[in-house]
Amino acid sequence: MKRLIIVTSLILYFGVGLPAANLHTGTLTGKIELTKGRKGENSIVYLKGVKEPFVSLDQVAKMDQKGKTFVPHLLPVQKGQEVIFKDSDAFSHNVHIYWGKRSLFNQVQGPGQSSEWLPPRTGEYLVLCDIHREMSAFVLVFEHPFFAVVDHQVSEEFTIENIPAGTYTLVVVREERGDLKEYEQEITVKANEVNTVIIEL
Ligand SMILES: [Cu+2]
Image (cartoon, rainbow, N blue to C red; front, side, top):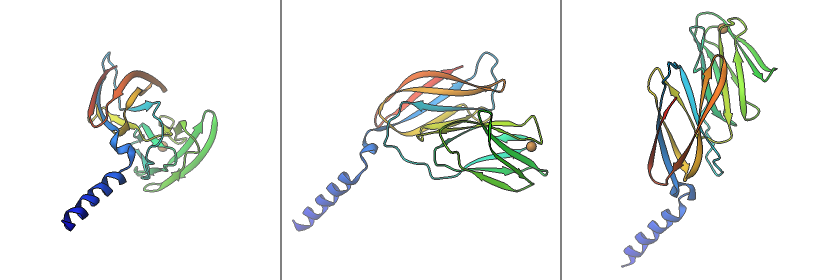
């Protein structure tokens, strides 16, 4: 009888100890189908209107310079996440980051070298290489971790986990002719479910 009481109280303890957010979150999986002759390297999807609390991503985000291209072309990060730029080519590149027209960071890097940058605020940053004018990319910084990259060369699918249940605007960000364009769709995330959405662009 004594043993039974101990087991019961342990179960209760673990139940109470779970973060409240875990009990009311759901997963969103989706697919972005490009039509109308749209081609793409990658897209970003993110949710608008998610309220705190949410976790902070502590891993470093990476952008490569490879074959005179920034990979990925669009990189989403959470505020507080550092970005590492790496030169994987056999020649030098430079990482030049702009906030609007203001230059924020400018670093030359040789083959195999890398540099770190911490975005100062949420928003959209343009990344250029002054050595190769055809190279450009964007880093998008969000307050929350509810975003994903869709690499259209590999798969059109994405998954975002641990989303507080609710109705949000799902935004797809695409780079079109050097500018960022956004497409929006309302979605509902139900707790403890895998919610699915298919978006045709
Ligand atoms: Cu370059």
